[in-house]
Length: 127
Image 1 (cartoon, rainbow, N blue to C red):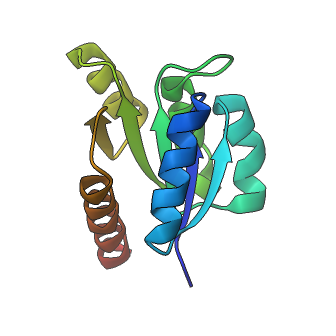
Image 2 (tube, rainbow, N blue to C red):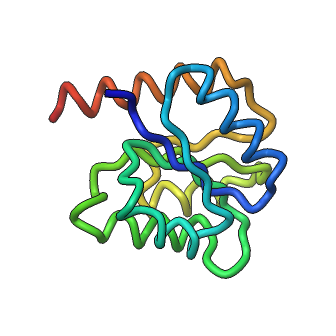
């Protein structure tokens, strides 16, 4: 079974680029335009990993991450925060909300995939 990744980003070009790159790596991928959209898609798509932008309309990445972590079904889902924000406050807010990893934009797909694999391996080992 291929792992499922949900990309939550309001910037369609960024989300499309990520989607194609992750599909090329063998992942099953879906996209959500913001946190509200993500919360609606979670129960149907059931992702193993959520790649979360921070700054989005309606429901931002911090709020969405908190909601995800409160939900027993998705409490152990790997959450990778991606953001153009370089301030420590953004990183700290995402970590406190429950993100497993914070990566700054720009990033390389190779590094992102490497980190996702590490996080999934750790989750599998700790079960």
